[in-house]
Length: 232
Image (cartoon, rainbow, N blue to C red; front, side):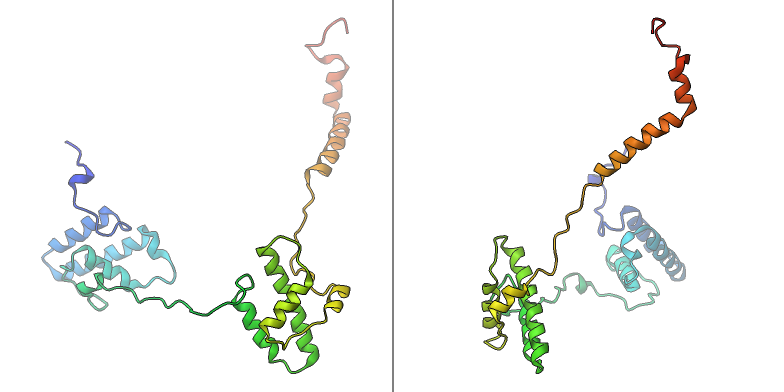
């Protein structure tokens, strides 16, 4: 029997299910009894749940699999569908356009969320809480600025930007910030020591001690080695 090339076969309509599922759908279409067709289609749905990794997700809609059966059958499938029978127009329906937020960001290296946090800090009426929020925002802004620009950053830049973004409502004393180091980074880079150095030293001492304690090792050293030279 001569093998059949894929170029000579019918094109796969939904590649995520494969050619065998498509052949089974075509076979179900040829069954004359509608009740038997429905039973076979239900069995095929259960088989798809086991074969296709796409439908194994917990949030997967079961109606999608039945709709896919109609798509594979070119909407020529007469069965008792537990869901609404889909229309051919769903293949040409365009997805809804996603609206992109058209909000202007004054300092892109800080981001829009920093501006939102500044608005929330301005709402605080207690002066101490407002100062604490300003210090936290300064730390956050310095961290974001350092990620964007690796050069050394002076605290005066953060104080000035915070004042501009808050329209002069969040003002910190620059001298106090510098003396108390209030804008210390929130996240420090961790310097992990190399674990191999101490381990090698410990293993070296342990290996030597184990060799001295091992009687078989000492026995071979005393003269029972068959490959040892006689003149030694």
